[in-house]
Image (cartoon, rainbow, N blue to C red; front, side, top):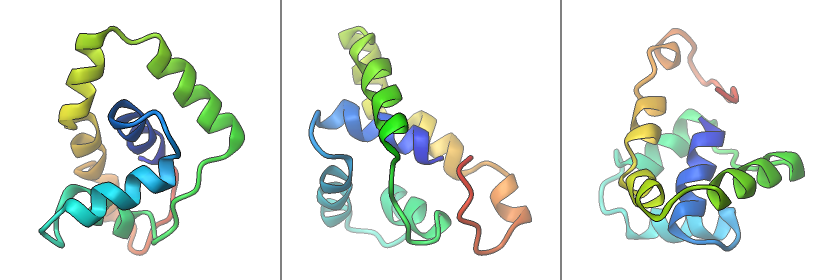
Length: 96
């Protein structure tokens, strides 16, 4: 999930993933919203390795404008959040 979250955030803003996440979370009015839920499922830890950031940057760089807009809608991150494997493991901090 951390990878999908990074892709969505990078499609929203080309800057720092952590800062973009904080900005999106602060605008989310519901505590059960997409970003709050992702943060909870990831065990309150949101870090991306240099390699992950490089992969995310390269992936987003190669997206068309329409693909970038589609990713901004968030269906991929919603699918990752709703992955049934989260139900199988409590308090997980896995990198799905």
